[in-house]
Length: 274
Image (cartoon, rainbow, N blue to C red; front, top):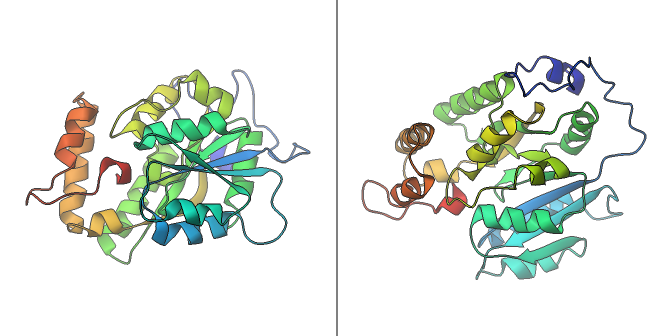
C-alpha cells in the first residue's frame, strides 16, 4: 500500500482531515526535491545504544544532504556524548533533563521542513524517511509510524498490533512511534508541553484539531526493555491505568510520581524512558 492510499484511508475527525479543505487526493510523487528532515533524538545515558542508532541514521559514505540528525543530551554521565562526537555529521545539543525539554531544544536548532522525534531505543525501518517525504508531499502536517515492540512475547506482539491499528484509525501517536511534524506546524502548537509524562499524548491531542494527520504504513521497532524490566503484564496494566487516568484529566505531574515507583517499591524507569 503506497502513502497516498494510506492517507486517503485514514479516517480522522472533523478538523483533522489529511487533505486541504475542498481538495482531493494529491500526487505524492510530485515534489522534485526531497523534503529536508531533521531527526531529533533525546538521550540520557544511552552509550550502549547510541552507536547502532546513529550508525543506521548516518551510515559511512556521503551524507544525505536532505537529512539532519540532532542528538539532545540531558546530562549523560556514561560517555554518551563522546560517542555522539564520533559521528561528525551529527549535531550534539545539551539541554536540561526531561524529554519534552530536550526535544524542544533540538527543534529550536533544527533547519528541516519536517521534524522527526526518535527515541534512543527506537529504530526506523528501511525506506522510512522516503515514505515520510511522500506523506509530507501529500499534505500531512503531523503523524507517526506503526509500531513493532521488539519481542517474541505474544502479549507484546498483540500490543504492537493494537497500537498500530489505533493509529491507522484515529489521530493517535505515542513517542515510541517516531512522531513527526512539519516544523512550522510544530511551533504553531507551541512545541511539546513541559510535562514529565504524556507530553506525546498532549501534543497529538492539540494537533488533531488543527492539522492534517497521517500514519505512515511502516513499522518502527522499539525496545521491550521497559515492559520486561518489571514484568510484561504488570507494566502493561500499569501503563493502561496511567493512560486512563490521564484521559480522565489527572495531572501528568501527579501520574509521573506514581510511575516512578513500582508496587514493590523498586525504582521504575524514569519518565524520560516512558
